Image (cartoon, helix red, strand yellow):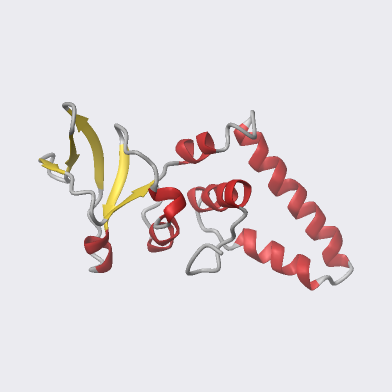
Length: 150
């Protein structure tokens, strides 16, 4: 699971944070993230209205939704595009294959736009980041500019 600052920043957007928490969701709190003392929490449901987090020591605490950032796992990101892509894994692999093939043939002609496209897709360090960028492109037509989605 990617818990890097880049992935946390990428996830801290309206499109991702509209998600309703479910059992097993991975959350991080802004105050912990900003202090560089990252505290990882698995969210678990208890009862009808309460949601608890399980801390590092196994203790459970009531989750305060204010300041919590949901970090989607790869399977959750793949699920987000199931409406438009029946085979989710193949869709990303096919997409990247086509992009890199186009870029490779285009690079031979010295195209600057292709260089930027290749650089963009190679800038993601984990599969979570890559999947998130793919979901944001496919669902919301947005790209990551290293600080925010545009």
